[in-house]
Amino acid sequence: MNDLLMKRLLRSSPSESGFSMFEVLISIMVTSAFVLGTLQAMAINSYLQVKAEREAQANFWIQEDLELVKSEAGNTTDGDLPDNICKRPRWYQRFGVVLRQKKLYEKLASEGKNLSTADPITTPPNAPPSQTFQVVETRKLVNKDYRLVRITSVETKLKDADMLKITYRVGVPDDSDTQDRIKDNADGNTSIIAENYAEVIPSQAYNCSG
Figure 1: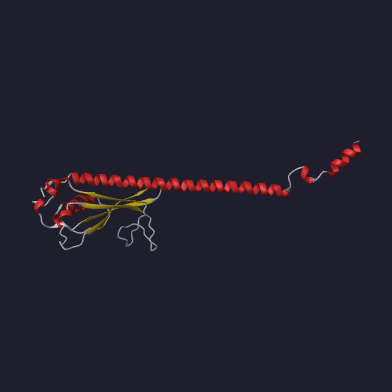
Figure 2: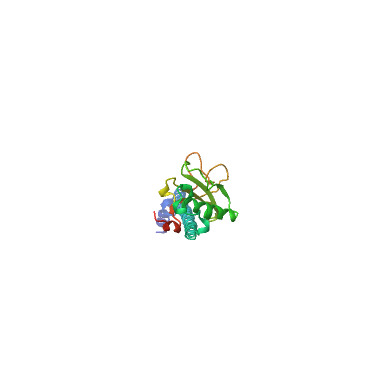
């Protein structure tokens, strides 16, 4: 009886006594693929969270500056305005230009902020709608430097010259020859993470009858 049992044990295949090397390797490969996939998903999720946080902070930054601009527009006084401004016949003498020059450009200059280009209040009446690129501030958004640029323009049509048009951009700083001082490349891709457009009219413009 003992001899018969011993013979059966000796005839048992190796696969019945444990895992083969092939099975162990397969298990390791499956586990590694799962771990790598999990790590990749975590990395992508982390990147998207940082991106979303930066965009949210950038949009809040834009709204913060826009509220300051609206406040400046609301605080326009007679001392900021040319005499009889409501009867001024030239677009560059109207409220939109006054708001840009007196309340934005000069305000930034007095604070020592970096400005790129700004046309004077005496711009000829036949000039095209003028644009001014103003570097408002550079700050860190989630441990990376970004720049807020305010691009303002005023229409040359008298009926539209009381309105200041503002385009905001937030992107990676670039102090080379780019107009907006934000990093752009030849492929048309930009570092801009937030943009916004607004139109602001100084409160005193509503006092004009026509």
